[in-house]
Amino acid sequence: MNSNLITDIAKALLLARWKQTLIAAVGVTFSITMFITLLGFMNGLNDLLDGLVLNRTPHVRLFNEVKPNPIQPASYSKELGYTFIRSIKPSGNGQNIDNTAAIMQALKNDKRVFGVSPKVTAQVFYNIGNIDINGVINGIDVESEAKLFHFQDYVSQGNYMDLKNVPNSIILGKAAADKMQAVIGDVIQVTTPRGDRQSLKVVGYFQSGLADLDKVQSYASLGTTQKLLGKPVSYITDINVKLFDILAAPALALEYKKLFETDAEDIQTANSQFETGSSVRTIISYAVGITLLIVAGFGIYNILNMMIYEKMDSIAILKATGFSGNDVKRIFITIAISIGFFGGLFGLIFGFLLSNLIDQIPFNTAALPTIKTYPVNYNPKFYMIGIAFSLVTTYLAGLFPARKASKIDPVDIIRGK
Image 1 (tube, rainbow, N blue to C red):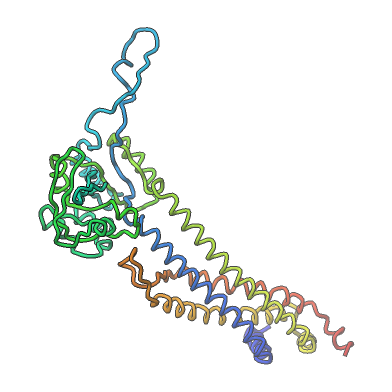
Image 2 (cartoon, helix red, strand yellow):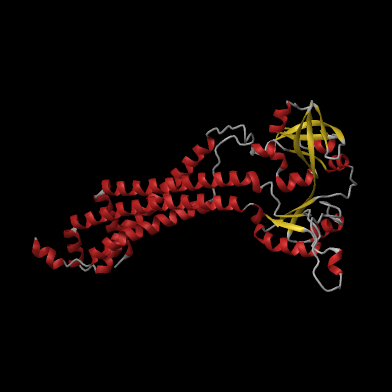
């Protein structure tokens, strides 16, 4: 039968019961709206929470873990018997990575590597009068840290480039600064475990959103930290690597460990708990959205069932005038898909508008000074999934009533009348 004729008949049946059609379409629209809004908000929240750590975490970290040499001189003895060694102490250069210049050059030449940032970690005491507070100063290459790890986004006050431009400067963790009552421009005293004391000028505050971390961590330039420790410019404790493909991190960590003879840790191992949390939140979002669509599908199923009972005469006349069972089936499936398409389309529009409204709501917290509004992710994938689910759900909801309508015998209907 002519497709245009089938479409016209489906349209006539839709308009004849426009209130029920509107209710079914509103159900689909509401489901898609909440599906888009929920996915956008939950994934925006995932991006925010993961970004607090993952943006600051290298894909591969090269370092030297302090540990005793497993092969001791006594192990080389060829005399028969067993050698027992107790209380083995570590030796060597400690945390310093040997031959850092060659390692960094090799990494920069690796086409899989996006960037490399060296770091020096220094355990210190912040001196507050007669009280010493434990702290950690991270000596960084300011420009590479900003390029690779969004360092500037976490400097809540002050200019991050002052670490490079101002000699003997420090950006304090905000919680540590509050504890010391240190304001920008003050000079603070820090002491190394060896007893060396250094005066550093506060040029800014660092705020990661993790209060316990901000009580301890501060940042200085590589040169300032090396000077504080009394080490040469070749002294590096960490080499942080950012890759083009984060999924390649575990394999490359093993490769670099063997190649450079250092310890290596990949981002998946270091932050597995965050990936688990993101996955759970995403699954919950999809589950709720799909449940809403299934509920809307049952509404369409019931409406089409009622339409078939009320339109028995029309179906009998259609079949008596030459329409086949498949034609009748196509009519009711067209009705269902039309409800799904237009309901889903309006759902996408309202979902975007509601997401945009949430994106404008102020979100002010002392822990996250750079975040001004609630996070929302506008990934087009969510909208494609939404309209696809809408069409599939409404198609399945209309399939069973359509099959039922296609099997109606017009003789039985007319004889009953």
